[in-house]
Image (cartoon, rainbow, N blue to C red; front, side, top):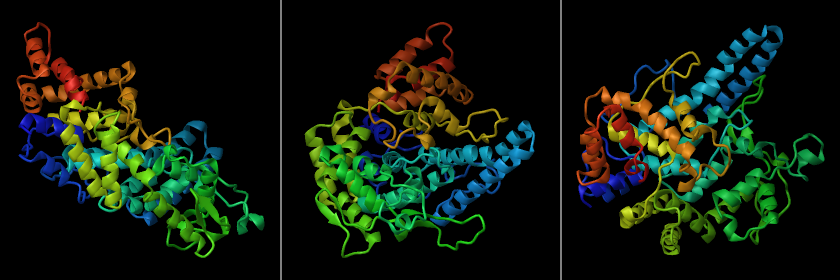
Length: 490
């Protein structure tokens, strides 16, 4: 690849090259070299490793399941206290109390800090291609606050997925499905087997729930193309009964360890059959789910499903059967070894070249315009009275609230779902809002465009012509570039 082809490829599988980055001579090796192990998540302010300033004192990212369980407990305690205070305070005072105790620390600060860290890694981190694949997996295994107040669990859950990108799919699947964020999001923590000890003894009013069993088969592994039935869904959900979360109690009566937890009392004890394979009988109830997930992870239909989604995310909306077959073969031969699979996707993207392109979703576009332009990420606290750009709110305005996905199937991988007039209008409006910070750094537009696209490119010629027209401000020229097909399409 020449340097311009390399720059385009870096935007396809990453977020492009920043003005201060050297374009490597072996860009495919550069991309594949990032797949073995990702860097730890930091609030990077630049590519020299300096950290963002003006962050709230004591701000930190949670990681362990024990930290998650404690944070969920504190959120629940704050909710209960807010409800009690609301009964005794005037409405305006009760609203302010709720803002201070719940709205700001959980609904505002949690997504803000997580998106800021995610953006810092994409824009300033040393492994932008790794970040793009991380974004793929956080979308594949989507969780959302929904009605279960799991805000504090989403970021640690996503970083758990990141940690498993250097291993096998089966390991990531096991941890994703049993993580506190997932069992709460899809209500599995409340799912009780109809013939479980807890049900037969009348100790619990919770009922059986199919949500996680269905998504395990439909979204995370086999896909409907495998031909599973509703009976398979029910059986998978039965196997999942008992998997929930151990967390602190209000009276602090329960001791740890806190986090993912299997409760035999809630589990459906019978033998279940999924896709012709029986689970139960000779081995412990807890092991039924682990055996099921291992079988699903190694099923050929799962290899095809994951391969198809990866091809759609990085190469084309309509991957050919030959492309899917090649990636599926790599998946199966490597036993689902994710670095090997990711490197194969990168090689396929490089082989396809500019002939196959993807339209950037809002998040990818946002981090791309920051990285290729060299702009600094905004650090504006998410207080309701503070003006300025808050990245989590900005992504919502662009149509992709990363930490609040409306459905378990994640954000669309299809170009058409991001190409509407409304979605494009949102980006154009933000480009005009974004451009003044670039203008304040001087007239660097030509340098950026030449580096990314070259002097023979249509966008460079268009901008050169526009410069000669009256009343064309540098701000408007930047906005034209940032919303041009040259940037919108990877």
